Amino acid sequence: MPRDGAESLAIICPSDHMLQSEETAVILAEPPPSEADIHFRLFGFPVRIHPFFWVISLILALRGGAPPVQVLCWVVAVFVSILVHELGHGLMQRRYGGQPRIVLHGMGGLAICGDCERSPRSQIIISLAGPAAGFALAAAFFLGVALLGHQPRCAVGDRVFGADLVAGTPIDGIRILGMQFVWDAFRSPHMNLLLKHFLWINVLWGVINLLPIYPLDGGQVARELCLLGSPREGIILSLRLSAGAAIAMALVGIFWQSLLVALMFGYFAYSSYKTLEAYRASHW
Image 1 (cartoon, one colour):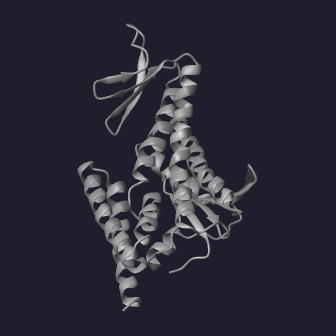
Image 2 (cartoon, helix red, strand yellow):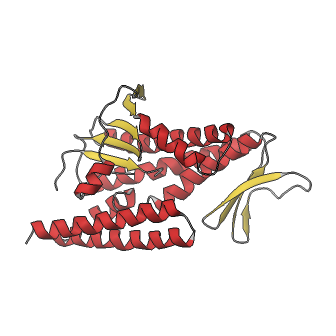
Image 3 (cartoon, one colour):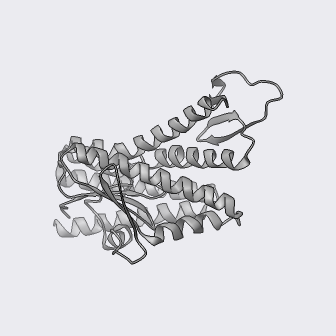
């Protein structure tokens, strides 16, 4: 269906949705205001945090029975990462003439703008700006590690970028998508944990968010690219691509033994399929 606004979704990950089934609309729509909402402005953007944002973040943190300090580290990392992601979208929406507002809610976040430029180029740039902001945040934290004197290193296969390890120096780190990010360990294990959370959320989910799946940012980019040919055939192609990629990711979730990933992408596959059916039915 046509839309009069651009909404960007981050599902501990993001984006706008021009096409959506009724089921998707219910899940991804902006939640109604509540008395427990938190309101503030950041860089001129109105920001609203729905209470379910904190609830879902806590549920994700408590699945493994983590102690309170570790739960706090996770919630802080999620809050900052999703807010920065939405700020990335919002800055580009403002760049293209809009006056966006940001909402953090149970499923992630929305950068909502009803008056920004609607050209394919602007929409692609706006969609990519969220993951780009997350990657920049991860890089900033890695740079901060270096400035604090804890030499960071990145390894891809057999190639190591950064100074050689010093014998006897304790290290910590995380492996993400075949890449290793390591650093001279901080004395505080919570500092190491917080850094791992920031890298995991902004790198791993940033990459996943670029997949051509509705309603992720990559799905928005794929849609705009497909529409450059035939609008009707482009919509159908983008929805088929979304359903296929989502099914593949659901299978990856099963292989990883991650029920959350399997269910989330299984739902995205279902909603893309239902949207495709509805679109075809309305255009006979």
